[in-house]
Length: 286
Ligand code: HMG
Ligand code: MG
Image 1 (cartoon, protein in one colour):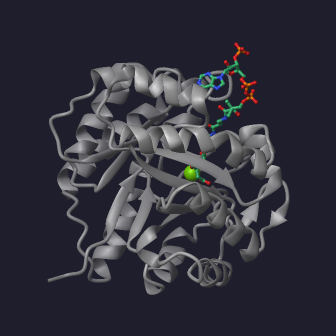
Image 2: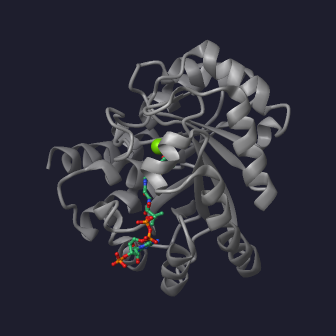
């Protein structure tokens, strides 16, 4: 039997957060409901971040209230601080896990979270305690694992330090973000070699934006080094509002095609994914 690769679909969050047009709750829910039936292993549906910082995610509570929960797809939402945790808990939604996020570079930490890396970890500490107490699982993100739009190239040691910081809060799995898609096979390999010294491949995911058109090649490098979870956005939606010039994540359709061609099973239903892709493209074009 073919070995599995898990697709962690982030389009409704990482994709839509960068759309300038106001997208209605109904449109988001239509996309989310399709994606929960597409066979992806997990789906990030929104973010409890400040609406002043990311207006597009301001309606995440309404999305959680309106979406269907008649599926067995794992779900997640981003939570940056206690305010976000409280907003999430008030919904009572049966979300599988929350995602907390830090940066490996100080410049991006400032731009995205308005604080240093050390301060971001301090801010997350009570969130992690609350999630563990509530029995909600955690996922950690580290941004700028090879390059930062403000600080330039990022040393593998900085990523290791960030991994240690998150593991110091809890033994959560970590998604390694090439936020601006500037990673190259050699920089991704060097970063992963260092990170694998402190966290095994089965606790890691790859999160590649596709600015440089190298995301699929970088995924192949990560696959070769044992990673089996990859984040992607349907129709390549997305970017990060605090990473200038970063376009979308690598497209889910392209990741599924590539990893299946390499002999892995994803469990994704191409027909449902294509339907979701058509909905996503209509959302993007407005
Ligand atoms: P701040 O301005 O330093 O925080 O932002 P603050 O505590 O001073 O709050 C400012 C205002 O926001 C206050 O309102 C707070 O109440 C409110 P005011 O008193 O002025 O009316 N506020 C909130 N409202 C709702 N929910 C909250 C919340 N927190 C504060 N949770 C903060 C600090 C962390 C809030 C802000 O910097 C923020 O929201 N940042 C998130 C930015 C973001 O979402 N970026 C995109 C996601 S990360 C990403 O895309 C990377 C990733 O894909 C991986 C990769 O590609 O690398 C994951
Ligand atoms: Mg991202």
